Image (cartoon, rainbow, N blue to C red; front, side, top):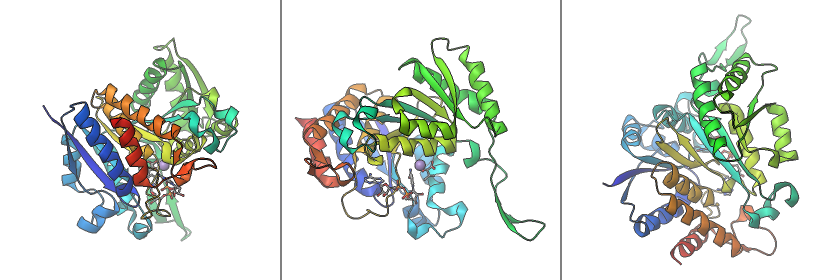
Length: 359
Ligand code: NAD
Ligand code: IPM
Ligand code: MN
């Protein structure tokens, strides 16, 4: 029976990188006889322009009835002045919440060919393979109350609520422990338990859970130290688990260790393996329309989609191997370019991955 993939290119470089990812998806769909059918829709700024809202009920329903969702990126200066509740980013948050995608896997793996592109010295990042497990549907991103109000002194004040209940902490904790069991069996929980009560509970629940996973070594780190340790000695980490906002920040930081934010894919999963897949980067308005964005994070997100939602591990491995081959050939988009390599455009990078896949 055929399975349905909802493709949401989004804004800025979203459509440029998605065009390449779709060529790769179409290729493995044929060669591995996956019987996948793609449907397309709008999200973010493009949906605001078309329907006046960043995520229509119809698009959310389409996402809910699809087997997986592949998303480019949303947002851009054109929509920066629209009301907060209608911003492009709300489309993305609405999909995450509406699909109950509480578990966000953000692997940061250094391709050895890109050691020169990393912002750290090659010896600090050689062999880097860490996984950030980010809670995605709770915390300060969704906590109530939130808003901007006038206080008793007549001042405007903005407020958000950092809140986690133990059910939310436990389910992301379990996902992280299980991920660690399948890897290096080390889990570092990142919090701010020296200041924030919500993260005192976070730490307590992680400790309670650890009794069920005796083979995993659990440690704890404050988020400020974790940011520092990521750029000091990133290879000390295997799996990191953290809340929504800390995970957002730490994953951009980890991305740069691998050479570029244009290299990092992600999977956002519900409790049953249904997922949405997207690069961790945004719509990159500064380079949109120039045909120079790196499509590899999105192409690698296709591999994650095949692995986690479509039981197509062989096809996922083939895509990852093809990306490795293209890097071996010395082909680089501008963001990962270094002297001695060959600079290519977004579509040339897509051509090369496709050729490597079909070789
Ligand atoms: P960004 O990730 O879009 O860009 C940060 C920097 O990284 C820019 O210099 C950009 O050119 C570069 N970059 C990002 N992706 C790249 C790629 N594939 N190839 C080469 N270079 C790349 O972050 P930002 O500038 O803070 O945000 C821009 C817009 O994107 C905002 O509207 C923001 O809300 C949105 N955003 C969306 C998502 C998403 O859809 N998941 C994620 C982050 C930011
Ligand atoms: C990401 C992005 C989003 C987030 C924004 C665009 C809502 O930065 O996917 O990392 O903060 O989660
Ligand atoms: Mn982010």
